[in-house]
Image (cartoon, rainbow, N blue to C red; front, side, top):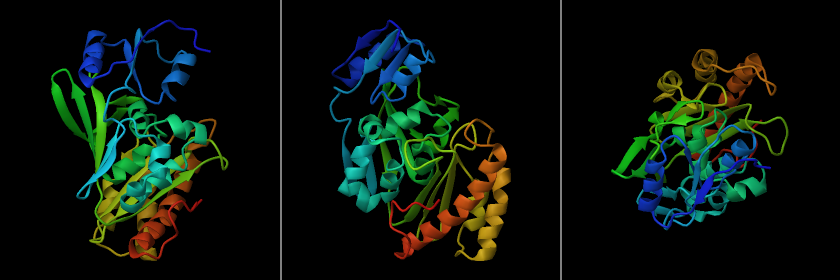
Length: 293
């Protein structure tokens, strides 16, 4: 039960939405799927004066391909991603990640953009969008701007979005690639990640490696990427980058896992993920959606 009073508005245009946000600095929340926001309201984690529901704003639920650029609107849910033929063909890693998110009921409502706007350390979308070449597109009262995903996460539940801005969509560059999302959960059902690894590899052997739930924000590892760049996989190279993991992450101990276990298992996941991603690039790896841990 939500024992709070707040004003609820459902604007019909982006302009109306951004002006509502601008008029209530520090006391407004944007509602898309609401799976995080409703829980935070229930648990007294947030106390807004105004909730702005953007579900009536046109053109925010599109998935489309422009050349090698995939456009994903801010109202696209994880279920939409799982069911999209465009995603399956051009960005299957998004569908693989989406299958691990919570439960079917949550996936039907929770949005990809909302997941990175909530910006919890274990958000599933974070490592995958960092591994892809992703741009976040926003609109505010003073116009539009773009933010590279590498600059998006600024802290626990904090992002580079200004208070008066609405994220309209993401764009993802999707040339030929192989990828993998490896997520450790406590059981095969609804659960947050104890640790997660997102990997993308391109035909020129440019690797992108990102981690989730093992730092205050989802992170990429420039050091591991540099060690891998231009090299085919072999046991020595894999052992080298796995040994780098403890210096690249900063996990915590909580009720779900210890820092030591998260560090160890992240290395295991990186090892398996690299082999799977390179295999998928070559057309010989496991099918997308196959659990690797």
